[in-house]
Length: 424
Length: 207
Ligand SMILES: Cc1cc2nc3c(=O)[nH]c(=O)nc-3n(C[C@H](O)[C@H](O)[C@H](O)COP(=O)(O)OP(=O)(O)OC[C@H]3O[C@@H](n4cnc5c(N)ncnc54)[C@H](O)[C@@H]3O)c2cc1C
Ligand code: SF4
Ligand code: SF4
Ligand code: SF4
Ligand code: SF4
Image: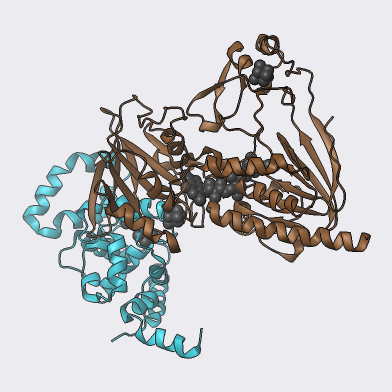
């Protein structure tokens, strides 16, 4: 049974991405008791799936490692992974949260030796790689996962594979009898940091993501660029494995659009500019855009990418993509708004710079909360002791998400301090 | 925003944009265009346009009154609705195109011999006579619009089509002699006259 010791002075953080981790650590390091509930088997959220960070082009693993070390060293922070908050009752200073924990089938004894993964046969789409590759039924979600502990896919439970995994484990870490648990505990304040998800590219009908193999999304491109990713960092085409010589980026794919997301997702211009630096200089890159929104200090980065000889900018929202059946090349159709020239441009690979939408939809919040037109959490007094952090509040880059999360931690601390003062 | 600022914006705003907003159907949408280019790229007729929709909207904002109103572009629109389906700002582009065509016609700026404009006129005249469209006469007017000789040639070329339509009871040869009208023809004509008066009364003058 999972033990949680919590009081009305405890801060509950929902979501352990970079924002939730930041809020949890900031609060825990001031001496507050913090419980972090994360849906995935590991913390870090979507930044763990990025190859590099703009604007410095450093690796996300670096910052994540620091956070993980801070987390390990702090006795005030209790991380519950593979868990979801299903209900929150009460008011600021006196909440009761219900949390459902899914069985991992692997306990703390695990040394991440990997023997169980070798023993099992069944393979599944690898969600960490956005389905670009496969993973085993016993797996470590990714190389740097924290906690460094394997997971058994629930689909193998009751099959031979489950027994094979158990037999392979020398340290008795696999417990096939683990059950789903539902626990309840108290909290004085809640930080809501459930983040974002990529807009479903299948909904952008004219771009043919569902029909054309060589049309991919920006989140998939991050995985392809990573040397530890499904293609070993090689830029190859999904249709035929051919080396990619020309890439097109389509901006605002699903953003700033009445038919899709109304808002500008803010990070995708910078994400594409960053991704334009991933391929070798011989690869021709074309960026199709409405306008480039490299906000404030990112202008320098934009200028640097603009100066690169292999990068071309076309001011046009692409109208449609049609596959050239002979060579599998996606052909982009549209009108260049600087000169009103029609084009039909073929590329080896097309990357849709998909927008960001909130990961939790309006109807599924387990607590009363004010949501704006775009589905993000508004900072409203009616939210009581629930404070949004990071991308659950808006489309933000890491820097802004972390700043926002620190602010949310401050507000949560104020609430539990008030409780402490009255309870004395 | 201060009153002075609002007054200045009004004073210096392109007066052609104002004119379009006031006098063209759905014209008030033009300012919402963000010049993304999707409508132009999506228009199946786009190759044949002098100015694709997005360019027309830019020209309106740039005050290119004569160029827009005497252009043949908006007459090319086939109402396929591709542009409306894709416009990220939700502009009713098709309707604006038709609105511009109607307005240019009202002002007498439509290019000579523009086929869509010619057909529209023939259709309208035909409709006004009996309150319903006489398809036989409409077809014949189209055939003969460029003179008697050309008319005979056109009629011969489409003979089969005409015969088939008669067989399928889609057209009746007797309609050539007068043709039947709506029940209350004079009532119909009064309605149209009133509608035209109202429409004319709504037009605002711009210098
Ligand atoms: C293609 C692309 C490239 C990018 N590149 C960069 C870059 O180079 N530099 C940069 O600064 N930013 C970049 N970003 C933006 C960056 O990814 C975000 O700023 C960052 O992920 C925000 O972190 P977060 O913690 O708010 O959200 P997330 O990373 O989404 O974390 C949310 C966490 O909450 C968990 N969760 C969700 N729902 C629940 C639930 N119901 N219960 C419990 N837990 C839940 C999730 O599993 C996840 O772990 C990029 C974005 C994209 C799309
Ligand atoms: S569960 Fe056992 S076999 Fe699997 S990685 Fe952990 S220690 Fe190794
Ligand atoms: S950041 Fe750029 S690509 Fe993303 S929605 Fe905004 S303008 Fe479009
Ligand atoms: S699609 Fe809409 S917003 Fe884009 S150029 Fe056309 S009218 Fe303007
Ligand atoms: S409705 Fe008219 S303007 Fe719009 S795409 Fe079709 S033909 Fe072009």
